Image 1 (tube, one colour):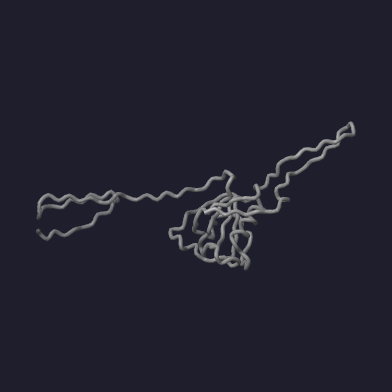
Image 2: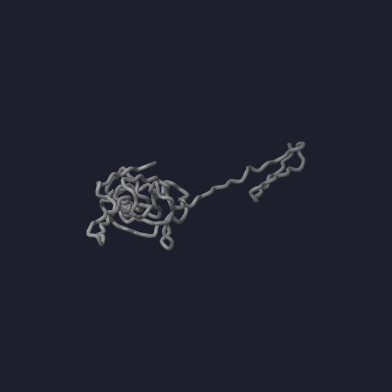
Length: 179
């Protein structure tokens, strides 16, 4: 999911430097701003588990904001030159230059509506709805889920020994009741 937010043209301005030369003439040069480009597009990265001791994003910008929405949080983060934004508990905005932590095991952990715009979801009690600005190259941790192949069994004749092979390291005991 992508979110697009427009901002005033003043935010697009470069810094202009005027220099007076020894001859009395002047020259002007423009240097690009180091802030996040505007207008900007944000991409939802998913629901991340929030740990108070090791937060997913490192800058808490607001708490208990009754006007919180995805647009408000991403604007605050972009204004602070943070490429990541995260929403928690319906009314808290986090920003960061790096993303840490793991995706939540249950996506429904991020189903709390935003206080300022109930059609947006703003995380959960211990989970952040995380977004990343496009066009800025910052690392995003990857989560890999691996599953073991199913166990296989072989049967030779009724009443003989059953051999169970499990690649997951766990074995089940099956009773043999003569066929």
